[in-house]
Length: 215
Image 1 (cartoon, helix red, strand yellow):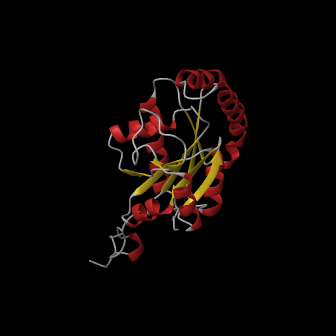
Image 2 (cartoon, rainbow, N blue to C red):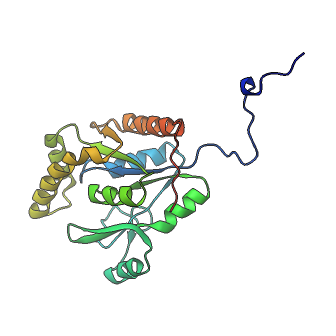
């Protein structure tokens, strides 16, 4: 029997072919839209991500755990990390500092784990400049009225902070062109949001020109 045309043979896995490169997924959106709730549900469902923990100088809320929800730092500790260039991005948000530790991302990618990080829109814009290969997902409310209700129910801000967050949210929603994907977070439909994020990751893994995230 004559040999098959080499181009027609099934492609065998070559040594060193380790499959799609790991992704950095950036989940962003206005304050109160439900980013934390989405990530918590992804963890509950066992989605195989490294969940990057952001550092912050803001006070810890009663329900939060240090090292799980955030790395809670003093301003001095935060500034030390800034001086040592240990953040992928950092910013002053509503009077408190927030930063994404580089080490968490580099460690995850070295283990070939997809990493997901939550940041505000300003942070997402900075990450896109530094790492254009990152996958940016904008989590949006069904309406501004529903976002306002969510912020009121949270009862974690003063009236002045509440008004400021609502005003900023209206501005942030105008930044959609910065993002790769839009996902609407409907009330009590977290599993639907998780499924859409799953679909985004699957689509990215099947791209012909795959993203390669390197720090």
